[in-house]
Length: 416
Image 1 (cartoon, rainbow, N blue to C red):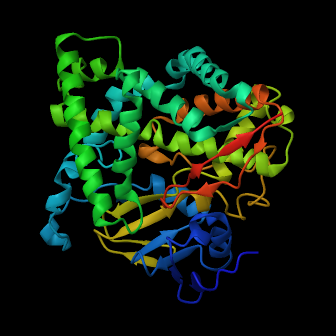
Image 2 (image 1 turned 90 degrees about the vertical axis):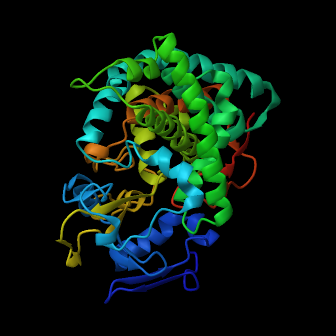
């Protein structure tokens, strides 16, 4: 049992928590901390983050759908009114790229953008990519199967999601490694206690990313293709086309969200399955058991842990009063471990029927790429375990210090 006394302090009476998010005992095994929070203060004020957090399944599920809360606030109030500082000059390129992000806007802009993009991501369209995903996964496994060992993130997990989302959008596959570098820098802005160096790297990569996307947009304006970017450029919604800035923001968020979390989840899932001691042949014996296995790994070791919301009006939740302009955080990964929702929540049990996990969110901001991510996991994981019999950990995995994301630094495997 991990001793949490020197990095976690919980005052259940006042619902105050002191927690060092950069302590490897936390981000290396956040589920243990979440269990303590569920036991003592599932709604709490995190002293270091200066914000209220919610862990309970029912509350997180409800708040994700609650239209009294939103992903932005400046559409209804000014910075002066809310006492918010002006944007930092050194992150202006990042802020510009985020300005029209599907993840950051509210209706009606969100409705217009999502309507234009959604068609490409509905299950019936995504499922047509099954053959491509299987072919790519097999080709990657072919490269290392005879070696008897591999570092799975670089040889497999990194490649499949970025390749598939690039194909869907219409970005050349050879850009994959560069897209990964830009994306890793970009999402550094969402880490707790990010440094000035992280912010500078994110801004620099945002500028380079946007400049590249603009060149691709210019090419598609001149010569449209059968891809999502051409569709976004040339399709109108109620008489309106996407602006250049909207196209750039949407393309960047789709590329980032379309692979970053799935890379983490492939690694997290393989580790969870190997740690469980379950027989992979039983976990992946048919489509139904495979789906249950994938959903259980998403519940137990989600790649994205926190989503934030602004209070759009004065509101009270679970006895806590919020003023318009207050920010709250919802810990999706903790909600997935709520013992009042999931029996024996820290245990890998793919046969469970407790209910749906919240790893992709809920409400109008439910992850648009969920069907693609689920398809990639449902195809890639069974292939790995089938083609690499005796798969096992070759070294203890190390978790990345990137909270509130959750993923591995590397995943060394061997077989035979």
